Length: 68
Image 1 (cartoon, rainbow, N blue to C red):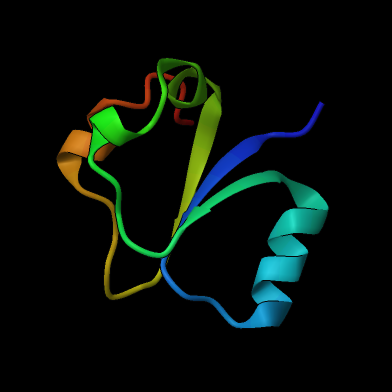
Image 2 (tube, rainbow, N blue to C red; image 1 turned 90 degrees about the horizontal axis):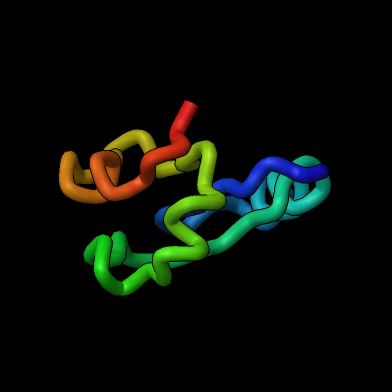
């Protein structure tokens, strides 16, 4: 079973390819408001991949109950 990862931002294609090889990736260029993600998706996400200069908001982190 693959780990669900929320990918935020613009990454080099090689990075996107490697993330997709290792994980079940949901990608957004811009950080979504928590309510823009379905309850089902929020419950599956266990990790967030972000660009170094962006990060993830506290609200988004708090809305993802299964982050590790």
